[in-house]
Image 1 (spheres, one colour):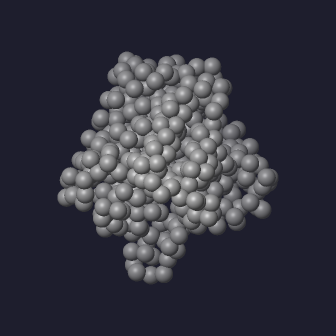
Image 2 (cartoon, helix red, strand yellow; image 1 turned 180 degrees about the vertical axis):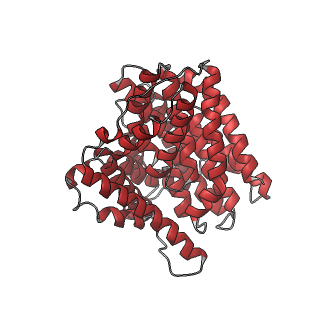
Image 3 (cartoon, one colour; image 1 turned 90 degrees about the vertical axis):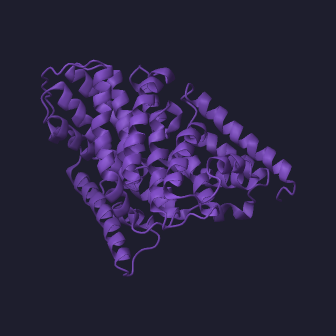
Length: 428
């Protein structure tokens, strides 16, 4: 049964939003509460309150996105459990011989890993790597953990597989050849930002450029050679498949419309070949999958309640010119991502942009949404789920933490610089 009264629907939508905001704030200090459980409860309320009926639940969930995430998480799970990702990281950072070059190299490492292995995965595997580097090089651990959080966020901007909100934009915006478009338009500003972020941290933490020597032996990190080869082949095949599919679309040739199915099909071909298929599937971040399923339900209910439409209309009153659209999207992304977190915000904002007339041809608007909603995660701890993952790992495994204020003091400058650089490239 649906609510007939618009007022009552608005109150239900407002209640769900206030619950989400309060829960995410509490979650930043009570890390034992999974983010997915918060979103799952809001989906329960959404359905029980009638904003989305039981029969509509399956219709509002984007299967394309869900299968994309399951496929990518499966391949990354195999790469991580086999030791492939750790071996690649060890090989890379062992090439640098002084503190400054090591910090810059670490930023590029975390950034590129997140661009192709999903940022939440790097948030999980990154803290141990950052800790080893900080100990071996005599660096302040907080510098390395902040570098990890900021650089994995920035790095994930440049591909549609780098983070969940980019997946949403690539799949639901309808933009042509998203993989090629993202890399073509966002790779250069992302690389610049991955150099500027460590520069800012070096200045703030006053790091000298003393020599260091890391004794890391990459092959010692490989736990299973066969699984490492399968994982590497799977990830390369997925990226090649996505790029080839984009080229086919640009050429007007038959191509896969549901791009999210590509990683899933590739992953399906690796399970039986791996040493322990159950371990691969167990390594999938099922919490994130549940988060997305329930987020689709919740955000559809919030949208139908119309509680956010006045705010969104104030920020973007209608279809505007190129400059005005990009700037409006930037302001909305940086502000509302702090309230809703960037993934739920993007889900709502995609629907809003479509309703006011933006379509597949408005590439700069969609890329602005991808870039600014992502780097909004560098402003505060609540701006991105990856920040919470890093924080939880620090507190549960390493007996240290980063406070909201510590993160914000550096994040304010980092986000301002990141935003300016992306805008320069998006508006030229």
